[in-house]
Image (cartoon, rainbow, N blue to C red; front, side):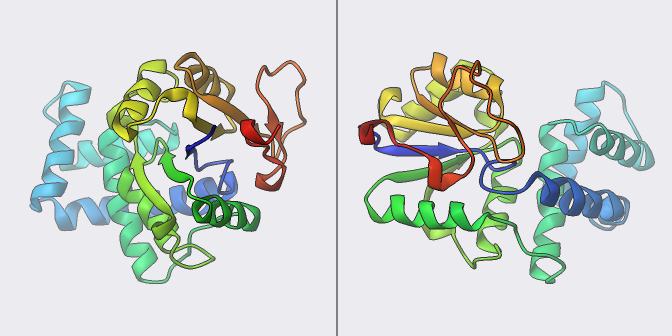
Length: 228
């Protein structure tokens, strides 16, 4: 019986186009100004030091900014970048520069599952802050009351089964009671290896019978294992 659902964001609850055409360009455009204006802020300074540590060089501020922009252009999943992007996006959401895209079918089913007592969690490469901001300022309003928790790469790599084992332990449920939703096969493989049920969202792709996971074109098409 499924007692919890763990969901990815990009390509799953939300459009890849929103992330790549709205959020990433916004962060790239405003990163230099944000870093220069907030470099003395302890939370920002901590992330800037982490950038230097990861590249193994004592970069000046311009060098750190150049590295952050390079990581954005390469779509790298680097923790200090994700943290700084989250801070930037917070300002964008609060200023009304954009709202978080969530598919209407995802909203419908998340509300239904939550109402039926299934606990909902998010696991995304974006920071926990960025996840909460997207759902708090979504097209459908504040969806954060639906979720019991959020996980990012601090708990582990999304393609490593150990991350899903750690999440199940933190949730307090055996993996077989958890359904993981994603559009990335290697993530689904890792979750299945950890013992979770899986469903692959194929919103913008042709279903692949050889994918090795149940597939759904949207949330309405998801079949919970105990509903078979």
